[in-house]
Image (cartoon, rainbow, N blue to C red; front, side, top):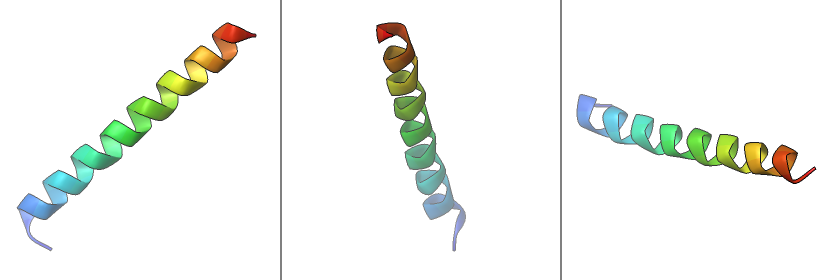
Length: 31
């Protein structure tokens, strides 16, 4: 696995985590 694909995978993972945190934040805010 080269550095470029690792960087892309990291960005995708980071975007997924941010989206999850955003969803959880709004879920608790709704309650």
